[in-house]
Length: 79
Image (tube, rainbow, N blue to C red):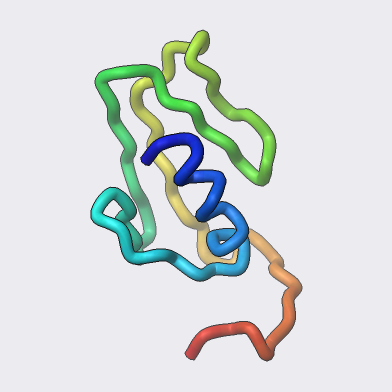
């Protein structure tokens, strides 16, 4: 996605509304590996984890059940 398109989708993404777009993949699972030919830009909780100058081209992400307490509005939780 272009930077402009990504910025347009950002408000929807923060609400958990994943737009339908051929370049956006949404899935569920316990782990994911991201690999790219060019350095990745990775944000975790709004903070930079990796920038292009870090030359990170692979990121392994695992979800740990029960490791994160989340507080939110129950009226906005999808069924």
